[in-house]
Length: 252
Image (cartoon, one colour):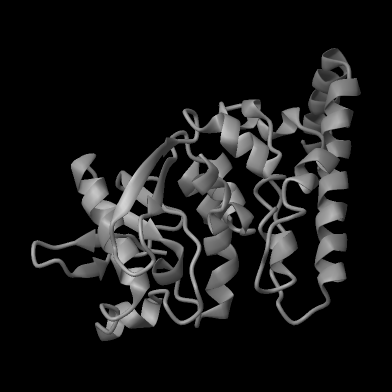
C-alpha cells in the first residue's frame, strides 16, 4: 500500500509500499463514496488512464487541499491498493484503520457506506466537503466532524464521545454493531470485514465463503478478546507475578 504524490505537472505517482513501516510520511487520507466505473483504480495509475474518470477530480481536489495544509502525500483506497493481488488485500485492509488513527450533509452517500465508518472514527481530524454540482469538480467545505458533530450524530447514530478520541472499548459490542446496521456494502462479506478494526481483531479475509461464516469468525474473536480482558481484570497482580516467576523456574 503506497501513497500518492502529486507533481508540478499535475500528474501523480505511487510511492513504495508503506505497510508495516513506522516512518510513513504525513499524509491526507481521502474517505469517499463513488459510482461504479468512475473510481480511479491502481491499474489506471499504472496505465496513466485515469484523467477521464470523475474520481480523478476528487483525487486532484484532495491533493490540492493537502498541499494547502502542508502535506505532500495523499492516500486513496481505490488506487493505492492493488486489488489484483488477493493475498495482499488482508494486510492492507488491516493497515487502513491505523493510517486513519446541514440538511445537505444528511443526504450524503458517504455516511451510508460500510467502509467509511472507520474513516469517520479513526482520524483525529476529518474535514467534510460536498460537491456543489455533480457535473463539475467544485467542492464546498461543510466543516469537520467536531463542528458538524450534531448532524453527524443524528445521521449515523454514533455518540459524540466516539468522535472525541474515546477508546472503542468504552462502547459495548452490540452498540458498535449497530453503527454499521444501515450502512451499504458491495460485497456481503464486507459487512463484517469493515468492522475488524472497530473491534481491534483480525481474521482471514475470504470472499468465496458465506457471509455468515465471516460473521461467526468475527464473533468468536470478539468473545476471545473479551474473555482475555476479563481474565486480566479478575486476576490478582501478586498471583500474576508468582505465576510468571514459576513459569521462568520451570523453563530453567
